[in-house]
Length: 320
Image (cartoon, rainbow, N blue to C red; front, side, top):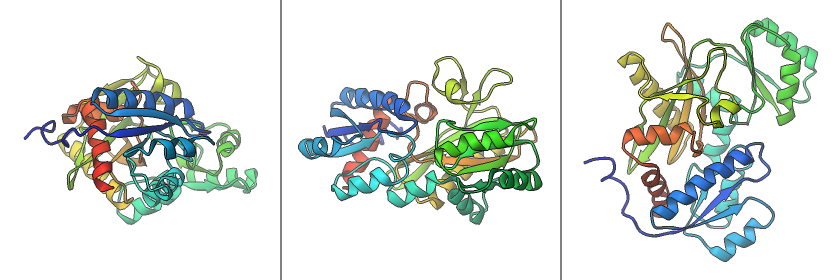
């Protein structure tokens, strides 16, 4: 049976696609939402796009959708807040529940769970807004050295991330990340940027083919390279040894499971020239924009974008 044949029967549904909000990733969210709404319409569903603002509760109660698709990125749409809100309204929704969403969004807590599961992560230093900056910089230097990456604790799309492969102004990088709340500092790992999606199909988890992300030399997969057409190349499957590909998929599936995620996720990695794997983080609501990685992986798994979105809303509807 092909993956296309294995998808849910096409019953037309009334869907609300939540978008935007006050997140730093609001514009990315709106691009994802536009793609999702178009795919739902093509699949025969009634799709209404609703902005996550003070008027959305009234709209949701008026529409009474069969399913809500949160095409949201970053807090409050990806950290469990919106998920709890939708559960209070009694509305089925695509994606992980409150607990899974909250844990996955907190990079520090997620890494503690990964360590407990024996997954390969690098050490880190957590810096909170109340931490004296000079103390934080000294702690980073003593524990991690000078070649580091500074990233906000609960943002996506590389927002607020500063890589310092050759050292540099760690204090300023931390200061920039703290604009979004607490942050993590990790040792810089030189290697290939890799991602692996996970999709729940019936009662089993399926790993996408492994994708390598290639950008121009001396660049990395930052915000501009993620969302500007032609700025990055997605190689599927990644040109890595078979045993490394299998291990990346195993880690992605394990991470999805130990975080308690649901429906879909995407794990991001660095793989060195010696094929050493570092798990960076797991996204519980991967992007669905025209340049996003998750739809590419699903397509190579056997799902067109329309079939993928149809599959996800039917899972949510059947879950109730």
